Length: 293
Image 1 (cartoon, helix red, strand yellow):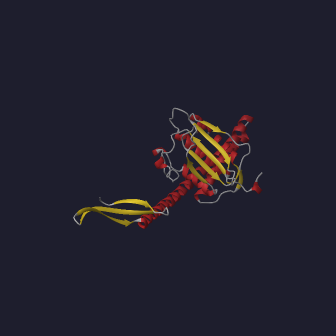
Image 2: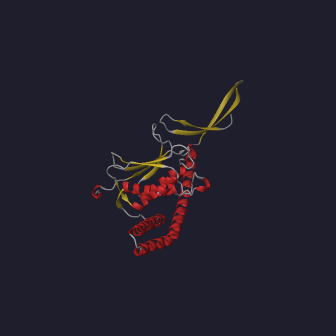
Image 3: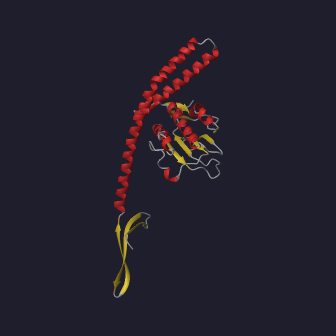
């Protein structure tokens, strides 16, 4: 048999990777099988380390490109947002009825919210830490649901949101955290596009009993993420949506979670969960007790 490789298990549980060759030979008038082996454990470990280093370098290059893209988007949006906010203020001042003044005030508030998001993009692009305030995460989730309402209503998606009786506090930037939730909702809605049956996005908040970590779960009833792609979905510019996807939504979510000392992961649905699509779990450290309100 020509050369083949296999990983064997030693008695202590460690692995050894061997390349083996077997040949028929004659020995004292009889045919015997002669096997030769070569230990490739260290060589394969070096190859794996080089592959990891290449992947890390590629990730760093993509993150740098993502930063440049965010910076460019932010600069392009700044001017029209300033005009929009200014016109809304003028409209409020010159309005002759209360209804128009309320609408103008609402436009100005939303323009300012967008401007804060743009500033957040710039901070992320420049790797600035952003604000560090006690943020009631329930409020951030509710605002994200409100901001994305036109998207999920137009798509015929139901949003299942059951806020806890007391909002858990995390330490961070409210605008960035809201943007993280917005991205997860939009991602879920887009994943169910064209789906004929159940279309639901479910959002839940929980506090871990041990360390008090705050856990946000965003689940959908879409097709889920294929197994071969699950390790790649958080990479910048990788998209499962083909030409229609930018590949920055989940990468931005991971960057926001990282800058808040947390993490984001794709987790499997429970065995009895009716939502069999993608389940994203964001875990964030709680605000220190002395900042609780």
